[in-house]
Image (cartoon, rainbow, N blue to C red; front, side, top):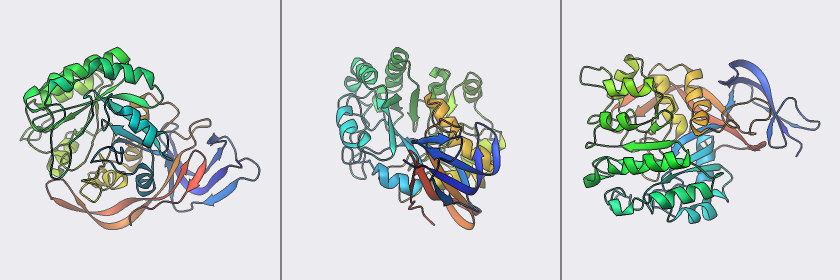
Length: 376
């Protein structure tokens, strides 16, 4: 493998604080100190080079679940070299997910294992059955066993609670998931939808390093009150180290909530798309489109990049990802910040017009250049 050099771009590497012109070299599938002899030079002048994007909330068990999208097509579309599938599979069907998707994908696919035995098994435009409604499906022992048996592929635990996801079970599935996460030493990601349980009740149970996804969902169960103040439970959770993830999806990002949170100084720790079959054509689309919405909210570009690279890597405990230091995984995403206008729609249909848009222009995955298929 001769290697590759991305030359002439503007490098943003949140770990090192690098934010300026420079080259990035890759050799033997990793970031290199300098270009190896005979390396291919890829001119990225006028573009932004960042660590390989990490989409912390995706659904890519294609063919195995009704909501799965193809991981390699999505990598080329979004520029995300690491896709974290959040609960598509549970302990009862994880083996199929690993054999048919994780081990075959060109993209790096990591899983957050659902504590529900079969994961998210009925999520479609015509059939919608919350997998956490029936406590008989909460498979704590099996989830712990499967997680321990697949340390390279399973990066955490997932559970979904809310009126749609857990219904009559309420908050009980979260207690099961917390127990599994504690037993395995893995981070926990929690989905929240409409109450019950309430946003406050959920975050009050979370520990340092646990992740609440759909953190900027619209009313009801938003993190802000009617007058725009952050809920006390949200402030307390962030202070003790709970992480807040966007998880845009088809129902979990509202402009009204996001503006109020931004005005209160509450930015998400991680930006993710929650891409699946029912939102890849809108309103979420992909990770760059979701990132663009935070530019529109006033989040600085370098912080937007951090929230989609270094921050999710740290949340997963993956110190080889989300950075461009020598020896790190040989992944990078080449972006353009193009002039607009671009229409940015939330899950309620509100549209904001912004004058800049983040688009993907190229990918390096494991030290190899891949042409993108980004929108725009």
